[in-house]
Image 1 (spheres, rainbow, N blue to C red):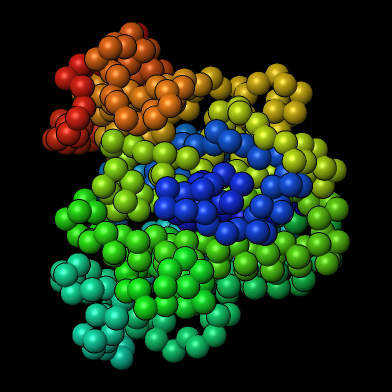
Image 2: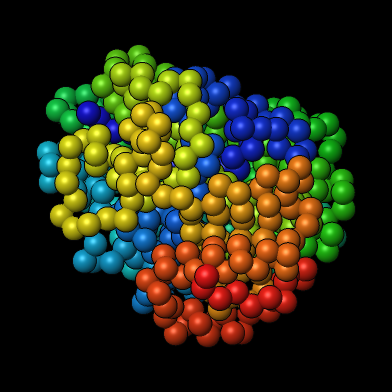
Length: 470
């Protein structure tokens, strides 16, 4: 069994056609929709830890990252990110290492520059790793300097501050000479991935990981994609403020942001189609397990927020797409309501390849339980982000800090689940789910996580109830 694993960064589940529409309208993803017809689609897939590096560490090892033991990283060559923002621990085997030792030829094609910063080691175990540089503020180029009028083209003056201008200047330096659609990052990633498949046809067995940082911000996209979702004369807006939308953008600029993001999602789909059809042309769909997912989504106006955050958590960020296309057609065209997480992808790949991990992992194979109706191994998902936990089961969505303060509880069976926080009315549910989250953390939290929880403010609208293990 060969394996191709495709991970998009910041791809919202509701911006994949089969799961849509997004709140602002349908996003066109015909190639992913076609893949879904040949795949088992998981409707209830969630990360294990967030954001970017934490999610990849969980996928690459099958091990829990939450509750971020030893995760207060302060490493040269990188900013101090959320807890757990660091390298894969040396004592943990990676998926690439395990498959390589089992005789697989392994490859990584990626433009997720965080994975390749000083002190990071996410390419460990790959026979070939190709880093396509230039995303975001990757210091790929030091010049030429970008004039203010170019900044104004992509970010209206009323939304600018020095941090956002500095961010855009580096982005524009990195991309200033690209002239064709094929020069854009997601196209380059998929073209290189297709080339790797062509060049490694002689491998007896292979494992390829394809990492596209798009549709992560900044949302630069060729004009013809943007114009699928807005008027050509509409303003551009490509930056995520990680703040209240109403504090940063007018309704017109919110719509412009959504149009740019939608266009980039459609572009990602178009170039995924190049990889997908390359696999079909090479005959690889007949003997290759193809998995497509994302690390998380992105709020673009949802509950007046622009960005990603762990507390209070929101489906626009925490719901992820997950499709598994089996070469024998197992589960093709079906949907599963099993609750699954990133670590289960690792377990499924190892299971499909007949490889036993050298040490226990936290994920569980997910294909067979979904097909035979036995149900997933888990009855809830716990997602960690900094000092916050989110616990989701078949009915409830709990978001709170790890000390049990600041609880939000939403009833997923309600017509509008996010309309009302029902924590105060259901303390026993809050305590039960909080207890499950504490148990998934091993019963306690590192001191750095506790301190962060103590210093973090409760979000507006939260319950005054302090959760305790049920």
